[in-house]
Amino acid sequence: MDATNDSVVSEFVLIGLSNSWEMHLFLFWFFSVFYMGIILGNLFIVFMVITNSHLHTPMYFLLANLSLLDIGLSSTTVPKMISNIFTNCNIITFPKCMIQIFFIHFVGGGEMVVLIAMAYDRYTAICKPLHYLTIMSPKMCVSFVVAAWIVGIIHAVSQFVFVINLPFCGPNEVDSFYCDFPRVMKLACVDTYKLEFVIIANSGFISMATFFSLIISYIFILVTVWKRSSGDLSKAFVTLSAHITVVILVFTPCMFLYVWPFPTTSLDKYFFIVDFAITPLLNPAIYTLRNKDMRVAMRRLGKRIVGPSGISQ
Image (cartoon, rainbow, N blue to C red; front, side, top):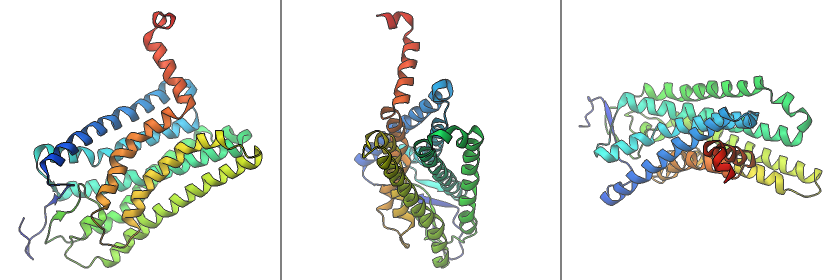
C-alpha cells in the first residue's frame, strides 16, 4: 500500500516472525500442533469439571473458566498466524486488526481477575479452612467470573477508544505476527507520546501490580503454613507451585511489553508466543499432572470408558 499524506490505511501487513521458508514450515507445524493441544487440553479440563461431581468445587470452577479464557486468548492470534503462513498472505484489514486488539485485552483482563480469584481461593482454603465453603460460596464464584468479564471489557475499552480514532495515513507494516497497541500506535501519523503512557499505565502497571500482588499473596500463604506446621511446606508448596508457575508464565511477557517505554524491541513478539501458544497448552498439563484430584478423576473416567470387563482384567 502506498504511503502518501492523503491516503488512509485500510489494511496492515503483519511482518511475522521470519522470512525463511524453513522457519515458516516449522512455525506452521509448531502453531498447528500447539493450537490443537490448547483446544483439546483445555476443553478436556472443562469437560472433567462439568461431568465429575468430585470436581464441583470453587477451585475447579475457576480453573474451568481459566481454561475457557486460555482458549479465547489463543484463538485471537494463533489461527490467523497459521492462516498467514499457509496462504503466504500476511494482510489483515483495519477492522479485523482493531477487533483482534480489543479481544486480546478483553480476554487478558478477564484472565487477570480469574488468577486473582484462584489465589484468593487458595488463601481461603489454606488459611481459613473452617470458613472456606462459606466464603467461597457458589454466589461468590459466579461473582468472580462476572467481575472477570466486566473488568475485561473495561480494560479493553479504556484503551481501545484512543486507538480506534487515531489517523493512519502512512506506513502499514506491523512488526509482529498479531495486532496490538504498541506496534499499531507507532504507525499513526500523529504524535502518540501521551497515549503511549496511557497504555503503559493501563496495561503495564496493572500487569506489574497484579503480578507482584499474586506472588506476595502466595508467599504469605506459604509463611502462614510454615508457622502452623512447624516448617513443613511440602504439601502447600505442591498445591501452590502450579498456580505460581502459571502466574509467572502469564505476566512476564505482559510486563516486558507494556511496562517499558515505547518503542518496543522486536524481541517482544517472541515473548508473546509464550502467552498465546505455550502457556495455554501448559495450563492443562500443570493443573492435571500435578493435581491429585484431577488425576483421580481421570482414572475414574478411564475405568468408565474401559468398562467392567476392562477393570476386571
